[in-house]
Length: 255
Length: 255
Image (cartoon, rainbow over all chains, first blue to last red; front, top):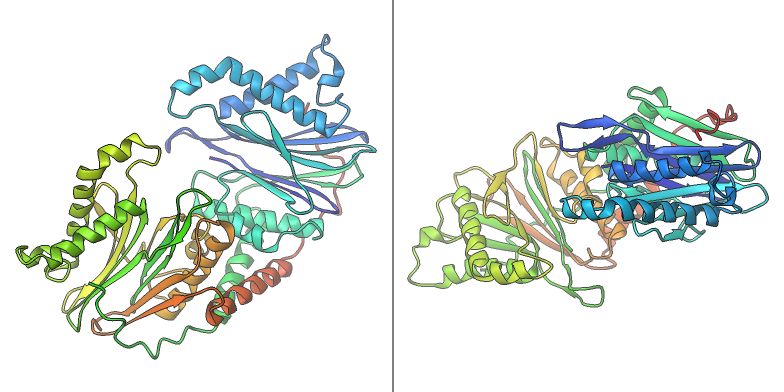
């Protein structure tokens, strides 16, 4: 599996992806699932993917091919499209193209055609956007009300985001929430694994972004893991115990 | 969906189940999923169920029928079986019997035959046991190494248990962890809902147990929810920020 989470805040964008892929428990590999395209000062586009690796690689490959091809209308490429909306469309088109070619064979197997994407970024002078693109090629956009999207193995890491994440929180806090959410997923599901790739982008600064890979043993990530575990332990201990002293024979046998 | 969690500790047993069932988003009902059978001072048996409600009710109904029938060998009933292992077998047999009758029709529908159970309890003079019974009728037993089982919508509530629960923790703490895990699930998944049923049993006291239903607005459950949310918020704020000050143009366009 995979776990990717993207968060849109008033300050900017945070994209976080693990790198584990597995085809059965004895075939585990590391693949990068976070890709950044960049035209200095003009645009920053970040794509993360989950699902069948052959499908998601084919989609990214198709998008790269388009950019490299001299005969393609540049408005139909990631680095030439006029808007993030247009780029989301391009990704949707690429997914549909891959489905056209590979879908029929995949549908005969157990896994089926399976892919989803998170797309975030900004073109200078336009709005910062975050989209989730489905296997069907259509997509939805994040908003102040729903400022985050997850793909892949999403459930373990959702409660912490549901409780604390919001659009107005500082970007560095969103990064922390994302890393805690990732750590919860890593601990509870073996099919999601380190290293983890992080991309942080500040709104309206399309020339500057931060990419960071957290390897096993990364001091900051280790520190988060330890502090978070300690904090959870202290937090539940601080909650008063339920009074069990009045436990008496219960409601009688229900049989 | 459903969320049930059972925890075995050195002090006793904690069983916790929500009560929501749904057949489509517009058909939501409340059904008790936690059943206690009790022979004062001699045995305490608690069963929780998840899956197709018609299946799990049929299983429980079958077990009740056996007890009520004058012609049945009492050793083949929940209140007469000689051990918790034998009771786990009875439940497995009941699941197989329901599958024999209803399985073929269910397998033709979209849902299929779907049921799982957590069985905990003790017979005086024997060990306290916790089992998970599968839809196939076979089962596994909890141990000091793996002292908890979950069924139903298990993922949202797993990270907190993975991090803090252990066999040696006081029973009241296990209750808190269970309620926090339930709250995480309630918040992240609409198909799991209040009220929540709790059964607490202290090892070697088969005459005494506590049953408690937490309704919407229950002061203790509300207090846990609020304190836990506050604690999480404070905890992630206390984690040092990732240093983003050295963010410079990233690794260059990967395209």
